[in-house]
Length: 282
Image (tube, rainbow, N blue to C red; front, side, top):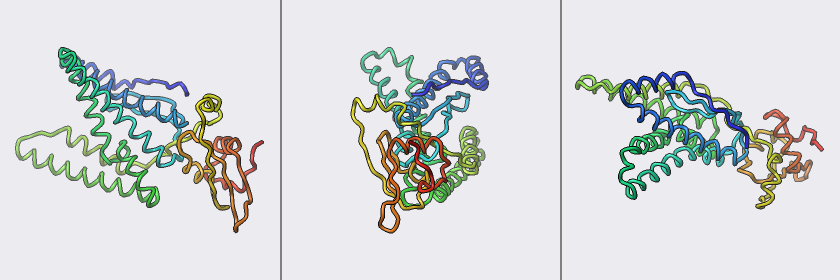
């Protein structure tokens, strides 16, 4: 597991100072803790599934986990994306359980509970790049292309943003200023038009091979035709299993790649390289 660097953006301290002046510093700290726990859950699951995580940045707008995440399979994307909201709900339930055992803790943990609940609910919305949006794209990719999956999810984000803006305008005529609603609508618009970046890059399985062998590791064989690329193989790899690859052409086996060779190819080759054209490392 790689060491994760923690970086606080200057806006975090500005927001903390503002909340402190308003007498709500504890609320802000509780929400920030919920954000950190959310991203740590992403990090732990991603590392467990052999994906590289480099840095976590915390700002007044939220926490973001940065890494080189390219060509993840849909199952892994779902597991990593859901880890954050699930962790938030578990911590919220744990705090509520303490209310029953130690009622006095309510006054110290109520904001922490609502911070975790709001973090989970918002991130489960099927809006890219929120966790729910990533899950939606991953599930849609099983039936259509990634490009079309992103288009479907972003269309939903546009429709939701339009609905929120409409509610905001109607509320203005009723004398209500729903500022947070229009801010979230702007976020949805930005996410809908943002260009997607690469997602997941697997770490070398062999880096932790000896540790996994103690518990036992499942070994699978993937079979492709001669047009298979490094990217197409990586997308079929799930979790921490070992994979051999066979390349077939016109009913004949033309190339076999062991899991050790495949592990090295994933680290050194371009995603669009055809496996049949690559020299297998010794």
